[in-house]
Length: 234
Image (cartoon, rainbow, N blue to C red; front, side, top):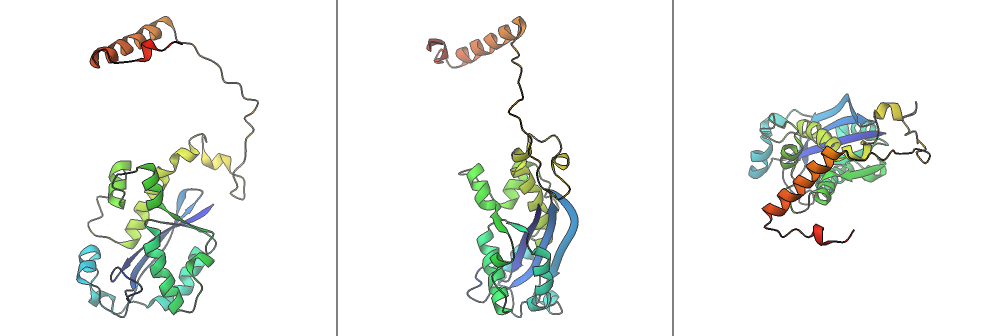
């Protein structure tokens, strides 16, 4: 399976109000592993960034003056993401900007060029409801090293998001000893029939039973005798 992890930086928050993309960063995953292939450009947005946006990404207006315009790299970009699954954090934001840029180029919307768009922010909200689910918060929670992220940058953020995505979805592959051994030559998952597997029942020994009983007694004591499992008929 081919996936592209994508991030953008922009001049502001509203594509409809005329804000533009100033940086695109993409990294490629095949079968959940980074391949080393990337797509990365700084872009001349033909307008200045808002002051608040500058504080986020730190990319000066002067730096972007000699950079290519989006239309000049659009074919290369579409070729890189073609027929892949896109992984984006807060996808609605990036997709809105990319669709506006593609519209200005006379191209079809992003959804017409890819297989699927997956929003890791929506995924994280389901897994961690009520918690902060920014990229930095997820890096901290999942043990992804983001010490190099002093400012927002599209390529660095895409690389971090790739690690975050793999951590978020690791449970889906937990029963595979080695994912590379569970794929055929075309990258398709090989299904294994487990209907005939017989799982042995391993009973605890006397020492383990006593240790378990002691844990239950400790919990009962710590709760002031409020545990209820001993009153439930088995």
